[in-house]
Amino acid sequence: MKSALLITIASVLAVVFIMPLLWMVSISFKDDIEAILPNLNVIPDNPTFANYSNVLTGGELNVPILRWIFNSLFVGIVATILVVTIDALAAYGLARLDIPFRKAIFSIIVGTMMIPNIVWFLPLYAEFNSLGLIDTYWALILPYTAGAFGVFLLYQFFSSFPKEIEEAAYLDGANKFEIFYRILLPSAKPALWTLAILTFMGVFNDFVWPLYATNSDEMRTLTAGIAIMTQGSYVNTPNKLMALSTIATIPVMVIFLIGQKSFVKAVTQAGIK
Image 1 (tube, rainbow, N blue to C red):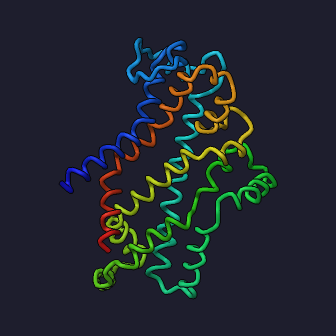
Image 2: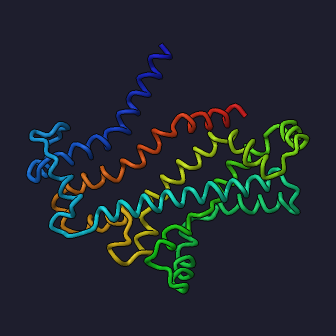
Image 3: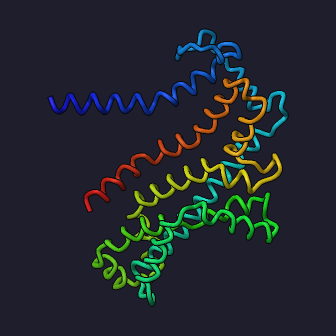
């Protein structure tokens, strides 16, 4: 009885979470007339791919949507690589090396997680504007290059790694960097994948900072472009807007599907600890 109840609750929650996604995909395959009708049919009467071809070519609006997709992927991938690299080095140094005041430094880093992102928005914009980096890839990538969450996540793993293995590596002639690169990093793959997935999703889906940090259409990211399109001609054609939104969800879903096993493993290990 208890098992059946849990399955029922899980099924209801699954439907609640997946329905908006299904509705978005459904509208993206409807024509201009059916998309604005007040019916609730999930399966379109006359499915069409015209909306996707329209948004990918820019349609009548002459906007560089393919460039937006490239910008989002480029910024997301580069920022993710930088975050994983910098946070892993910082976490290793704080967890395993004899650094003066490392506990205080770690406490300060973790404490920054309590500061709302909106607090640093204006100072960050003023700084990039004074450096002449607004409307460049630097402005889109640099704000994400290190994060307190990644340091906190990897610190927990590195600090709990058995010292006996590290000491055995020292006896075999390995130095600190070799231990970090050849022993700790391979063992931390689940945590690294988790950090990479969360970082890519956060950077790719962010639209507030890219919206204000870019001025030209060529430098917009996909989410910033969608935000602009919702105020333009696509308001009267929700099917094309939903097609564009569906395209925007594909990279995030692919990244999550690729790393979901490592993500679940990292969560499970954290729960066991």
